[in-house]
Length: 310
Image 1: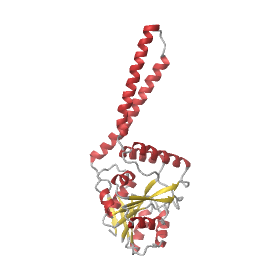
Image 2: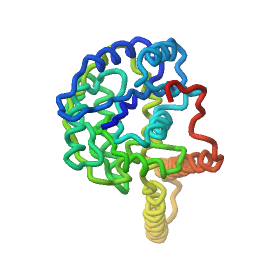
Image 3: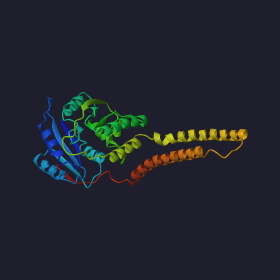
Image 4: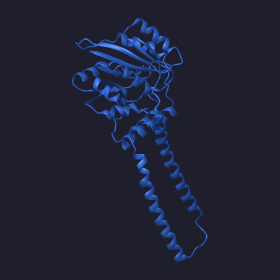
């Protein structure tokens, strides 16, 4: 069996040698002969990551490298790797930080041999993550599944095995604003989960800050559902009904009690509330519009500067 281990990397000069040495020492318990290829996608690293990848690829012909002209993001790196590995029997996506342990690989392969087209790891605990990240991750999955047309498994990351039929199906999806976790779920096929205890990062530092995670969450929510756009129609109807009822109450109060000059606080609260609702709705429309704008440009998802052993 010819399997590609797809590893996106960005400024991982500290973690890369440890990851590669760990995988080299790892043995497969399966009886069948497995030809494991390493497919690294260098996402525009600014440190020595690409130099290390060149050295590893020179020593091992089973190591393949794709290097971008600049940083295009992890979603683009995964897509480039899947494009290069579409003729493999299967692809396993794994991060270089070893937070998803290599011991998942044999389990993935076993489930695949049982007939599953996609096998994904579900984190049973996130104790290694900061408390704020754990809380925000929990709420993100709940909010996403509340809105999404196809809810995705909570705490299922990118670490997973994809069969050839799943890879070719994913490559048929042309959008540029990609949220891979949602796309993995959208294509369907027979899937199963594998429990995983998320380990602390073994070397280096994470490249994700909270602002990037926030933008990534917005991208995922807007890519997975249009419910937020439709929701404001109903919010507008409800506010209009409340406004009509309030107008009737004001008219009735005038008829019965006259028209004393009062109500400054209630008027200000009403104006500020309605203004806030309008700005929120415009912001949500703007999020969707910006993604339509990016799709309309028809720019390539990534640009490859160099390939090694491909």
